[in-house]
Length: 389
Image (cartoon, rainbow, N blue to C red):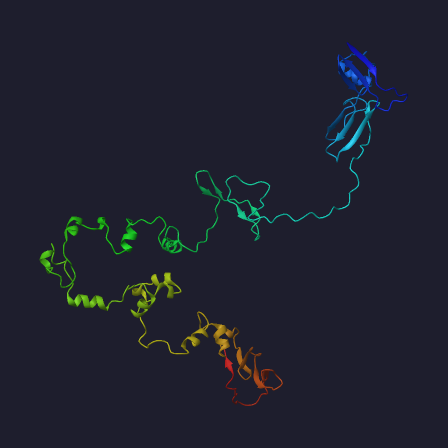
């Protein structure tokens, strides 16, 4: 049998009232009738529907009005958490900041333990790149362009400066030796072989005989080479002492085109001639033989330079310039030449019939034709400077 009884009645419930249910000899206590109902599973009537709840949404930027329903809250996470409220089908035009004023600086926390061997690297790095220090603190590292791939191949290396050797080799010394070697050097090249003082196989008329030679050919070698060792004793032989002396007297690396040697030989270099083509074009047989009188003396050329080209001593201009009179200066019968001064002669036309030449200082020529004064015969006297035509 189950018996329900109120243990204590209170006019104003204060939450301490109890309900006891006694079943057989066991009593179970509940704090309230509702608690007892809830524990016993008694189902009550369905209550009225409650009001629609709200949903808190979030996104980046201002929310669209079509998002959600009224009473929803939207948080803009891209702009410091601005909050928008939806009412009447639209969200508030301005977001409400949820960020309060900056608080006071808190107390400094205790110092952490000192890191040993810790480094700080960049936010990203190149795969397989060699790490290098950034600065001198030993704590910062940075990326590099030197790559060591997964098969240990290295790339991206610039110039390398060494203070030691590489695999036991002195690279600087080896490099100097290599620099002295001709590019694409060919020890079988004719020029290189000749410069080394050697002979090419192609230069030997009988390479087999040369290779079979088994003794020294220097002076005093045994057996002694004689003309019988050669096929032509006249043209193929060793030098005599006299011939060797001649060679010894020849300048080392003698060059017959050397300026010093050419000059010493009494010859001229092409470079010493201002008209090389003219000299080469001279035909000796056509040159004029030197006069018996000998070469020109000093001053002869100056005299010649003062003589008019194609000078003609019979030329009227030249004769007159010399102070002489040409026949052609007299053009009229009876015309005479009269001195008008020192070294100056003029022509005087013949006077009228029966006139005589009379001295007259008033005349430019000093004379004139005048009527005869009559009288017996006599003589006429003329100056030595008077000439007749």
